[in-house]
Image (cartoon, rainbow, N blue to C red; front, side, top):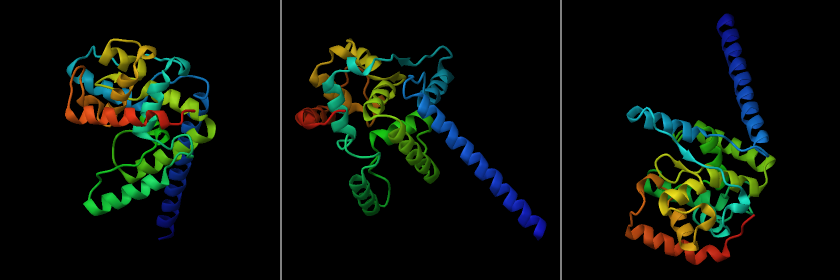
Length: 231
Protein backbone atom coordinates (compact mmCIF):
# COMPACT_ATOMS: atom_id res chain seq x y z
CA UNK A 1 0.00 0.00 0.00
CA UNK A 2 2.79 2.42 0.90
CA UNK A 3 4.52 1.69 -2.42
CA UNK A 4 1.25 2.31 -4.31
CA UNK A 5 0.70 5.62 -2.53
CA UNK A 6 4.29 6.66 -3.17
CA UNK A 7 3.86 5.85 -6.84
CA UNK A 8 0.61 7.82 -7.00
CA UNK A 9 2.18 10.89 -5.43
CA UNK A 10 5.15 10.59 -7.76
CA UNK A 11 2.85 10.44 -10.78
CA UNK A 12 0.90 13.47 -9.52
CA UNK A 13 4.15 15.37 -8.99
CA UNK A 14 5.29 14.59 -12.54
CA UNK A 15 1.90 15.66 -13.88
CA UNK A 16 2.10 18.94 -11.94
CA UNK A 17 5.62 19.62 -13.22
CA UNK A 18 4.46 18.91 -16.76
CA UNK A 19 1.52 21.28 -16.34
CA UNK A 20 3.79 24.06 -15.08
CA UNK A 21 6.20 23.55 -17.99
CA UNK A 22 3.33 23.79 -20.48
CA UNK A 23 2.09 27.03 -18.88
CA UNK A 24 5.57 28.54 -19.11
CA UNK A 25 5.68 27.49 -22.78
CA UNK A 26 2.41 29.32 -23.40
CA UNK A 27 3.61 32.33 -21.40
CA UNK A 28 6.90 32.54 -23.33
CA UNK A 29 5.06 32.57 -26.65
CA UNK A 30 2.63 35.26 -25.52
CA UNK A 31 5.51 37.40 -24.25
CA UNK A 32 7.38 36.95 -27.56
CA UNK A 33 4.31 37.95 -29.55
CA UNK A 34 4.13 41.30 -27.78
CA UNK A 35 6.40 42.61 -30.57
CA UNK A 36 6.72 39.67 -32.99
CA UNK A 37 3.98 38.40 -35.28
CA UNK A 38 2.85 34.76 -35.03
CA UNK A 39 3.75 32.84 -38.18
CA UNK A 40 0.86 30.40 -37.75
CA UNK A 41 -1.69 29.20 -35.20
CA UNK A 42 -2.94 25.88 -33.92
CA UNK A 43 -6.15 26.38 -35.89
CA UNK A 44 -4.24 27.07 -39.10
CA UNK A 45 -2.02 24.02 -38.70
CA UNK A 46 -4.96 21.79 -37.84
CA UNK A 47 -6.98 22.95 -40.83
CA UNK A 48 -4.01 22.60 -43.17
CA UNK A 49 -3.62 18.96 -42.16
CA UNK A 50 -7.27 18.32 -43.05
CA UNK A 51 -7.01 20.17 -46.39
CA UNK A 52 -3.89 18.18 -47.34
CA UNK A 53 -5.74 14.91 -46.90
CA UNK A 54 -7.53 15.78 -50.17
CA UNK A 55 -4.85 17.97 -51.73
CA UNK A 56 -1.19 17.44 -50.70
CA UNK A 57 -0.35 20.86 -52.17
CA UNK A 58 -3.00 22.78 -50.22
CA UNK A 59 -1.86 25.99 -48.56
CA UNK A 60 -3.20 28.43 -46.02
CA UNK A 61 -3.92 31.96 -47.27
CA UNK A 62 -2.84 34.41 -44.57
CA UNK A 63 -1.10 37.74 -45.04
CA UNK A 64 -0.13 39.95 -42.13
CA UNK A 65 -1.30 43.55 -42.20
CA UNK A 66 -0.30 45.99 -39.44
CA UNK A 67 -2.89 47.53 -37.14
CA UNK A 68 -2.71 50.93 -38.82
CA UNK A 69 -3.65 49.46 -42.21
CA UNK A 70 -6.72 47.64 -40.90
CA UNK A 71 -9.65 50.03 -41.43
CA UNK A 72 -11.37 51.34 -38.34
CA UNK A 73 -14.76 50.16 -39.54
CA UNK A 74 -13.54 46.55 -39.67
CA UNK A 75 -12.23 46.84 -36.11
CA UNK A 76 -15.54 48.30 -34.97
CA UNK A 77 -17.58 45.72 -36.88
CA UNK A 78 -15.69 42.79 -35.36
CA UNK A 79 -15.94 44.22 -31.85
CA UNK A 80 -19.70 44.72 -32.30
CA UNK A 81 -20.15 41.20 -33.63
CA UNK A 82 -17.82 39.30 -31.32
CA UNK A 83 -17.16 41.22 -28.11
CA UNK A 84 -18.79 44.62 -27.61
CA UNK A 85 -17.19 45.07 -24.16
CA UNK A 86 -13.69 44.25 -25.44
CA UNK A 87 -12.04 47.54 -24.46
CA UNK A 88 -13.43 47.54 -20.93
CA UNK A 89 -13.11 43.95 -19.69
CA UNK A 90 -10.03 42.07 -18.50
CA UNK A 91 -10.51 39.02 -20.72
CA UNK A 92 -13.94 37.80 -19.60
CA UNK A 93 -17.44 39.18 -20.06
CA UNK A 94 -19.07 37.89 -16.88
CA UNK A 95 -22.54 39.19 -17.76
CA UNK A 96 -22.43 37.36 -21.10
CA UNK A 97 -21.16 34.21 -19.38
CA UNK A 98 -24.10 34.31 -16.97
CA UNK A 99 -26.61 34.78 -19.79
CA UNK A 100 -25.04 31.96 -21.79
CA UNK A 101 -25.14 29.66 -18.78
CA UNK A 102 -28.84 30.33 -18.20
CA UNK A 103 -29.70 29.86 -21.87
CA UNK A 104 -27.74 26.61 -22.12
CA UNK A 105 -29.29 25.34 -18.88
CA UNK A 106 -32.78 26.01 -20.21
CA UNK A 107 -32.05 24.33 -23.53
CA UNK A 108 -30.27 21.38 -21.94
CA UNK A 109 -27.34 21.72 -24.32
CA UNK A 110 -24.74 24.26 -25.39
CA UNK A 111 -26.52 26.63 -27.77
CA UNK A 112 -24.81 29.88 -26.84
CA UNK A 113 -21.24 30.83 -26.03
CA UNK A 114 -19.75 33.85 -24.31
CA UNK A 115 -16.12 33.84 -25.40
CA UNK A 116 -14.41 37.22 -25.66
CA UNK A 117 -11.95 38.16 -28.38
CA UNK A 118 -9.14 37.39 -25.93
CA UNK A 119 -10.52 33.90 -25.26
CA UNK A 120 -11.06 33.26 -28.96
CA UNK A 121 -7.51 34.36 -29.71
CA UNK A 122 -6.17 32.06 -26.97
CA UNK A 123 -8.01 29.13 -28.54
CA UNK A 124 -6.95 29.98 -32.09
CA UNK A 125 -3.29 30.42 -31.21
CA UNK A 126 -2.76 27.33 -29.08
CA UNK A 127 -5.73 24.99 -28.78
CA UNK A 128 -8.42 23.24 -30.80
CA UNK A 129 -12.16 23.49 -31.32
CA UNK A 130 -12.75 20.54 -28.99
CA UNK A 131 -15.37 21.21 -26.32
CA UNK A 132 -13.98 19.92 -23.04
CA UNK A 133 -13.69 21.37 -19.55
CA UNK A 134 -9.89 21.17 -19.56
CA UNK A 135 -9.69 23.07 -22.86
CA UNK A 136 -11.97 25.83 -21.58
CA UNK A 137 -9.87 26.05 -18.42
CA UNK A 138 -6.66 26.30 -20.46
CA UNK A 139 -8.28 28.86 -22.77
CA UNK A 140 -9.12 31.00 -19.73
CA UNK A 141 -5.55 30.75 -18.45
CA UNK A 142 -4.07 31.81 -21.77
CA UNK A 143 -6.58 34.67 -22.03
CA UNK A 144 -5.27 35.99 -18.71
CA UNK A 145 -1.72 35.81 -20.09
CA UNK A 146 -2.76 37.72 -23.21
CA UNK A 147 -4.52 40.42 -21.19
CA UNK A 148 -1.55 40.72 -18.82
CA UNK A 149 1.31 40.83 -21.33
CA UNK A 150 -0.29 42.44 -24.38
CA UNK A 151 -2.17 45.67 -24.92
CA UNK A 152 -5.77 45.61 -26.14
CA UNK A 153 -4.55 47.06 -29.42
CA UNK A 154 -2.05 44.23 -29.86
CA UNK A 155 -4.63 41.56 -28.96
CA UNK A 156 -7.02 42.96 -31.57
CA UNK A 157 -4.24 43.29 -34.15
CA UNK A 158 -3.24 39.64 -33.79
CA UNK A 159 -6.86 38.47 -33.73
CA UNK A 160 -7.73 40.30 -36.95
CA UNK A 161 -4.70 38.76 -38.63
CA UNK A 162 -5.32 35.14 -37.65
CA UNK A 163 -9.09 34.66 -37.34
CA UNK A 164 -10.64 32.29 -39.92
CA UNK A 165 -12.68 33.89 -42.75
CA UNK A 166 -13.13 30.96 -45.13
CA UNK A 167 -11.79 27.47 -45.70
CA UNK A 168 -8.04 27.99 -45.44
CA UNK A 169 -8.48 31.79 -45.38
CA UNK A 170 -7.15 33.59 -42.29
CA UNK A 171 -6.86 37.24 -41.35
CA UNK A 172 -8.34 40.49 -42.64
CA UNK A 173 -6.06 40.89 -45.67
CA UNK A 174 -6.70 37.42 -47.09
CA UNK A 175 -10.41 37.72 -46.25
CA UNK A 176 -10.82 41.06 -48.04
CA UNK A 177 -9.16 39.71 -51.17
CA UNK A 178 -10.99 36.36 -51.02
CA UNK A 179 -14.48 37.78 -50.53
CA UNK A 180 -14.30 41.18 -52.25
CA UNK A 181 -11.13 41.27 -54.37
CA UNK A 182 -9.69 44.29 -52.52
CA UNK A 183 -6.96 44.78 -49.89
CA UNK A 184 -8.11 45.13 -46.30
CA UNK A 185 -7.36 48.86 -46.24
CA UNK A 186 -9.90 49.38 -49.06
CA UNK A 187 -12.83 47.65 -47.36
CA UNK A 188 -16.01 49.70 -47.19
CA UNK A 189 -18.07 49.85 -43.97
CA UNK A 190 -20.72 47.51 -45.38
CA UNK A 191 -18.06 45.03 -46.53
CA UNK A 192 -16.49 45.17 -43.06
CA UNK A 193 -19.86 44.51 -41.43
CA UNK A 194 -20.45 41.59 -43.79
CA UNK A 195 -17.10 40.03 -42.90
CA UNK A 196 -17.91 40.40 -39.20
CA UNK A 197 -21.30 38.75 -39.77
CA UNK A 198 -19.53 35.68 -41.19
CA UNK A 199 -17.33 35.05 -38.17
CA UNK A 200 -19.43 32.56 -36.21
CA UNK A 201 -19.36 30.16 -39.19
CA UNK A 202 -16.82 31.46 -41.72
CA UNK A 203 -16.59 28.31 -43.85
CA UNK A 204 -20.32 28.51 -44.57
CA UNK A 205 -19.89 31.61 -46.76
CA UNK A 206 -17.90 31.20 -49.98
CA UNK A 207 -17.43 34.39 -52.02
CA UNK A 208 -20.69 35.72 -53.43
CA UNK A 209 -23.02 33.64 -51.29
CA UNK A 210 -25.89 35.66 -49.89
CA UNK A 211 -28.48 34.61 -47.32
CA UNK A 212 -31.28 36.34 -45.46
CA UNK A 213 -29.42 35.79 -42.18
CA UNK A 214 -26.22 37.31 -43.56
CA UNK A 215 -28.10 40.35 -44.87
CA UNK A 216 -29.92 40.92 -41.58
CA UNK A 217 -26.82 40.37 -39.48
CA UNK A 218 -24.80 42.74 -41.65
CA UNK A 219 -27.40 45.50 -41.29
CA UNK A 220 -27.56 45.00 -37.51
CA UNK A 221 -23.78 45.23 -37.15
CA UNK A 222 -23.58 48.26 -39.44
CA UNK A 223 -26.16 50.10 -37.32
CA UNK A 224 -24.14 49.59 -34.12
CA UNK A 225 -20.61 50.19 -35.44
CA UNK A 226 -20.59 53.89 -34.61
CA UNK A 227 -20.95 53.07 -30.90
CA UNK A 228 -18.11 50.53 -30.72
CA UNK A 229 -15.02 51.42 -28.67
CA UNK A 230 -11.77 50.62 -30.44
CA UNK A 231 -8.34 50.47 -28.72
